[in-house]
Amino acid sequence: MPPWRRLSLISEQQPLAEQSLELHPNVGQLQAMHDAFSRFWLLVETALPQPPTTIWRVQFETAVAEVVANIIRHAYPPEPIHLSLLAYRDRIEARSSDRGRPYLERETPPEEKARRAEALGDLAGIPEGGFGLPLVRATVDSLDYSRTQSGWNEWELAKRFG
Amino acid sequence: MQVSVDMTPGGAAVLRPEGRLDLGCAAELKECVADAVDNRSVRLVVDLAAVPFVDSSGLGALISGLKTARLAGGDLRIARPNEQACVVLRLTALERVLRPYASVEEALADF
Image 1 (cartoon, each protein chain N blue to C red):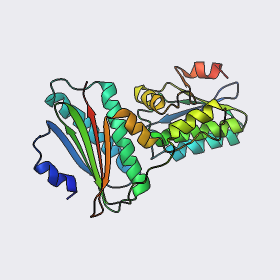
Image 2: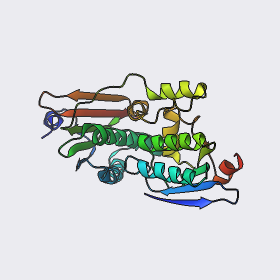
Image 3: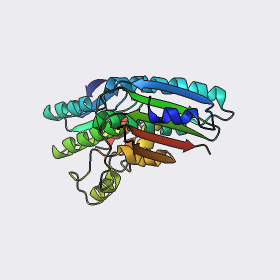
């Protein structure tokens, strides 16, 4: 059982809507993640008095998809990725756990490299990768990563309403 | 992901991917662009009308395609990105590099 599942059992706040799934770490499973989101948004529409707008949902789903793709692409988890989508009155959270390699941060943000390269007309200098996590940070309010002593990577994203 | 390719009378190529442009099929799009350039079509429009979702890998494939086309003396434009694709382009500051066009015709006319 991933670490945060134990925590949520003693948490004060219960989610108004939840969707959890196990994703086998291959790109074919990205469809399963998007399908889970479709189900989740339907639950959210029923459970929340003011469901978020389409663009809000698009931003959140994009962020979670980037985190999951990063896990598949860089962490090489040997087992399924646990993913939970949780809706509360004031925010939506996504939590993932995997047993892959630890995450290491890059030095220069690629969108900064892209801006500089574009300004200089330097085509080769425009990066083709590394946009994932900056994209996540631009679309959600908080992004936290931790590595537990027992070897779990935990990602937690939260986006507040309004 | 399927990618259909149409040639215009002027020798430009319109690539129409169908499905998500993400980690799963970024490589396919890069190959399609490389094939088009190998076949001497260096002016390329990627029509995103049938692409419901673009992630950073998909963006990377478009950037790679842009570089391939420009190195061959041509260019690559994107047309008809949906709301999600526009969000992604804006937030990565790549909308100045991959300038989106509202239609394939407008993208072709600007060559």
